[in-house]
Image (tube, rainbow, N blue to C red):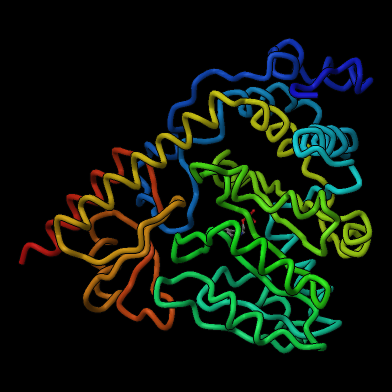
Length: 373
Ligand SMILES: Cc1ncc(COP(=O)(O)O)c(C=O)c1O
């Protein structure tokens, strides 16, 4: 289908009342070029800590939201369906394969709960902890397998831990906090080897930032009806972390299993923003470009200072401070920069999230100053 065609969706009234048609966002699908928003220009400490994207939301998403302010009294209904339709259309799947959630975080928790109550979880360490933490909270046993020496998932060590008690294997690819990515064909072979025994959950929060997202995304595994769940989010390339929109892609029987665990009702504004942003290819290219520029500024400073780092394909970099991460983060805080923490077992390594290009220049200056003495 490509861009949303309202008549075929038969939801003209909804968009007329919200102004999306007038804004040309639904049919044109292309937004006004975006610039960093007010938050990125304020005097608050610069947030280089939570893998957000200050280049978002796109102007098209902002317009979709401001045009629908007056509709805030309504429970959301059609927005979620429209979002499912455009996503399923792009992924060449039926709508039954898509579940819209409150950020991908809600989905991670739903899966942690559902699969944690019925078996063991196998995960890497360190990795994004939300699913594992929720599963542990539900009383599940979690086997946490160290990353390999390149800070990537050790797929054969993980496979060796899969038993008849395993219900789910969590693979965050690209991985947070290391910024590393698995070879896509290795991951496909891994899925082939284990999916008859346990569900493979692939967290693709950062997949859009890769050079070849289509090759790296595991959606072909779902088209092939494999026992796989993919999570995606509007928080990263779309810069909409505060708006809480994410989604699952999985076989309909798996979606059916997860849906009853959903806690949140669809956020209407977030969904409208997501519909606009999803079709705003100009913004997505702009956003990706800026993030890659930030990564390159940051990595070249780290190189100049001979600080080891993992080459990142995401919107954050994990690097070795060579000392106490606490001292380092406190020193950065004094310069008005909030940077991340360390992740066991990499005690002296610290994660820094990408802000704007200008902010990463500030961070680079602060780094040079810190290591000067
Ligand atoms: C790998 C990964 N998955 C999921 C999330 C959750 O994002 P959200 O709930 O905003 O979609 C994050 C957030 O940083 C993440 O890094």
